[in-house]
Image (cartoon, rainbow over all chains, first blue to last red; front, top):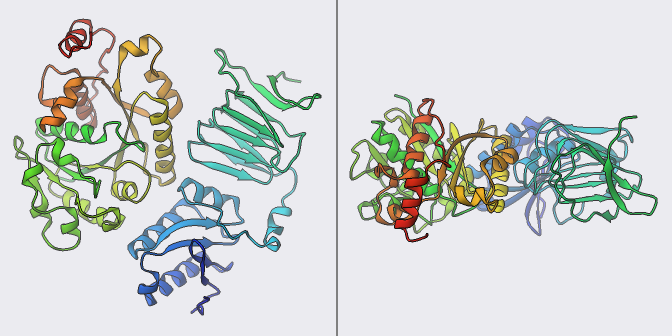
Length: 228
Length: 265
């Protein structure tokens, strides 16, 4: 079922997991008001609904999503997922505990934004990644902080952690076997590079910087890092 | 007066949130503060039992929100401290009966004539938790020295950071110094190293806490209880006083006496 939009290109339709609102690339504020206006117009239709949003390439900060979530919750609509092409928005949604994937896969033509990201692009995260947070990026990821147990960091390129790694790290997630992971303390509970999975690494008494990569025997291996 | 709104939360259930709320509120009341406790666990209310106010409940927080009574009518005065009140949860409703903006509105109404509003959060990170933290000026995260509890606390701290709720404070509850000494339990250092947030108190494991909860008489009232002392110290720290941490290792006589009395040694 597709309802006619009022003022914008906002579309709301039913999907298997509830409702999906697809936003156009118009200014966020207009889109937000358009969504709330549609809900206020047909409150009985939206009563108790589970809403997913596809926000396209909108860059949304925590406050944007928190405000909208509260406004939706005041209307008895629960926001459970935010799908976006922007890594910042995805990260925001993940931090708020919202899903960033819905069962309907995104159409392939929407992938072009990710494809245009150059090989040497890195996402810089200047904080500790805590349990329940998943950071995913189609380039390299640099974490300035720890990766705690229960956190997941997944990069198509390399992962560098200036801190302690105790969560799960996956480098070369699209199959790049030359990807590497380095960290000041690599006591991760699991490391993955491409499709290789490490056994559990022992916590070190006296941690030293280490680098993990796939060695010449095709095994994932961590070794102390030496400058030069 | 303008009250500080403090939410006590944990992620994992059973780590001692409700006990901490009852004890901190009582300790603040002992110090002459005007305190209102709110049970945020709609559908699974407990705080009234722990505070011994179970059979005085007439109206609850959902009655206030849905306009069946005035806020003052749902505030139950404590048996011992006339300046301490409880706003109980509804037992026959669920978390969706309350929204974050309802909590903000109620807390703002309470701010004018109290010193502290303390909200007991339900376990989990869903709607009830969102309601409980919506109005918080400050959040206390309670955890036990157990790997699973610490991981859930870490998740909660991550969400609080994302919601820009300021720096949460940590209460490490039910620490057993003997087990830590024997390397059978995470030490406070292990927990702090992982969570990286400020510690506001360590509460030693103490069976008098459970006895107090069952009797509806929070253990802070017992001057001899170590756990009670720990909660009294935390309450003073929340009032901005600089209280040194108890030395949990040099408590030989009393600690083992409690354990002997409790029949554990």
